[in-house]
Length: 168
Image (cartoon, rainbow, N blue to C red):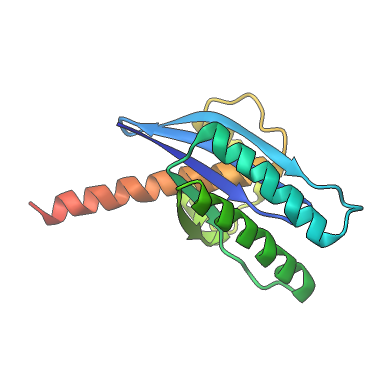
């Protein structure tokens, strides 16, 4: 049995995505990339572009699970609100596509992938290239999304192991 997981690094201008398949306990890279909205467009138009492009990704890869970064409050409240809107568009489209949506904090994902919750984006990318046997991951947004997908696969495996251990 295999499971397709779509990781998402949401943004109001650039949204990264990473698709993996989990089968027989192994994580296989399917694809990754970015959705780039026209920065000159008004914000509502960019969200429409995001929804349309993300719908195409959903239709192409048909993931059972979509994993998205939890929102964090930085210094710029306006950016956080825009990120929230982008997350909402992604969650809506994922739901329409029949996928279950999971959320994880960035620090948890970094810790799960690299062993260090404060790891740099470049460190995460380097680990993913080795883990997924990739020569390159062209955009940081895409590697962040792949990290989300891989971390979710790890968490699912850990949960399954715990359930087996409890039933012994």
